[in-house]
Length: 136
Image (cartoon, rainbow, N blue to C red; front, side):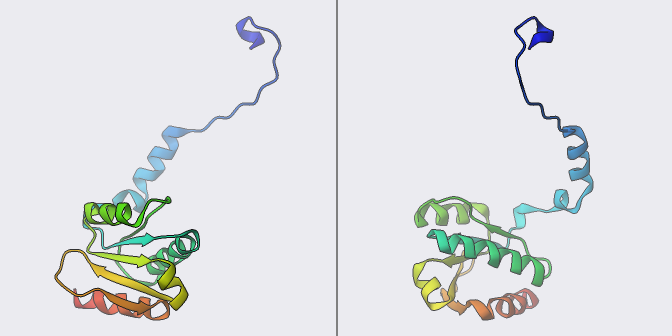
């Protein structure tokens, strides 16, 4: 502030090479993800379910090849999250709420196909998704 003609004032500064970050992002695999072909949208209702959904999303990304997953962030209502899942173009919505948490299940809702909703054990989810991926 003193350099600009004002009184001597303590301050904190921060600099970030934004252009460098943009260039690194463009060169990374993250820039090549095609979100128009989203496979799974994870819906979570409740604080504990939301925390668990992030872990499930990461596990799916690590263990199921060539699958794109988005875990909803925020405390939106179930209805709002479901609308966002549908608008995302995702093929499947995975639903995790209080009932599913208590039973250690996750609901699988097909958004683009006329198939019944299923409840899958969280332990068996990865195997289920891997088999689904192979049959695609």
